[in-house]
Length: 220
Image (cartoon, rainbow, N blue to C red; front, side, top):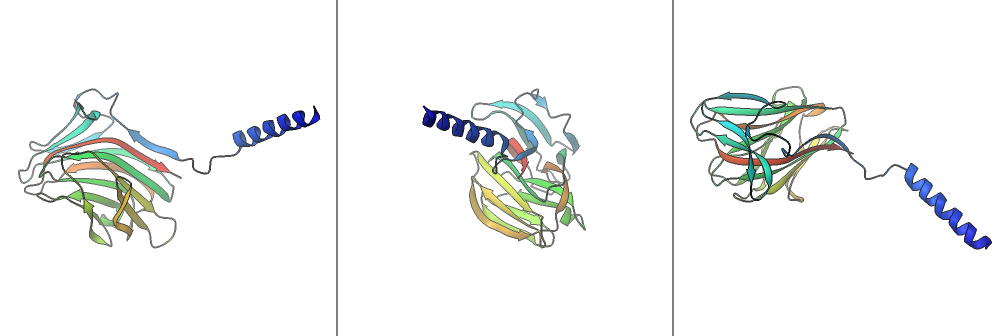
């Protein structure tokens, strides 16, 4: 009888400790967007749009990924679109991820933004140039680094991990959870982090259709 009572007491104590002890693997969500409650049609608030020419960004329903954002970039020189969302985090370890499905031949830019000593140091850009399947990371002082192949016509998950706790600050890029050649790359990007964007660049030939979904920014 006494042994049974002690087992119950121990079980209650273990449960109590589990409830009160923070999960070592818990993360804090800084930003999340999956477009499921966003009206279809031209992308609007709370996104900010800067645009010229024929480039557009629309929210649409798909058969393979639910409701998504589609960037429809004009390839004409001077046409561009930047869709931006603000966020705020002073964490020095931060992770951004998103799902992406680029059409064949399409080119795009995404950027994760924060503090830094120059324009180039205040962001890490992940981009794919016209006619290429190579995902490239661009920042200062490292310049451009080829990461890996980003296949057209299928959904992939791109993850950017920024490590800004100690100098030099670095970042890693993963595709579908796998490490790429963009691992431990030096960047001037620092906290506080303040936004992200997707872009059809104004360069000649940049554009095409690119779908995005499941934007997520978290901290440990």
